[in-house]
Image (cartoon, rainbow, N blue to C red; front, side):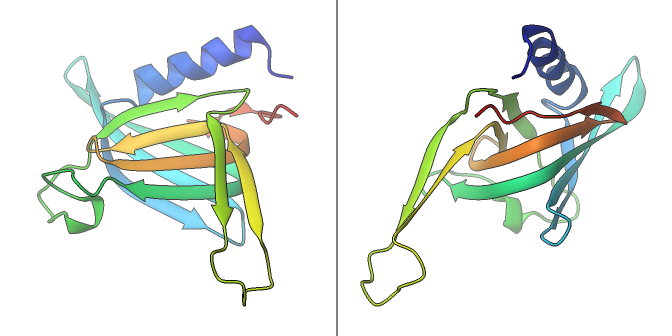
Length: 148
């Protein structure tokens, strides 16, 4: 169980260190079960680099808003900025994401459900949902973040 103190610390760090920063790299490592975000921001006229490392990632979902205008994450040029427009932690789950097969011939699964606990948005239009048990923010480690 995540204490209120840990929850507030994570939320505070996500807001002060990453939200509204320029996302300049996303690395997804399937074999290591990690997702890494490298974010640049400015503080007191200095450029600050923040590394968010989600570990023990059980699920990752990406949803692109079809009607959104402007830059898409995968349509950026070298000079365009990918803004980390929102990021948050939800210890009891952001909400359930369900994947259901519509093809009866697919026997591997009928339905998959995930209770994601992290959410972030890029350029106010690309949504990312993660289910991760561990988070590292600039070497500050938070464990056991999945609540049963």
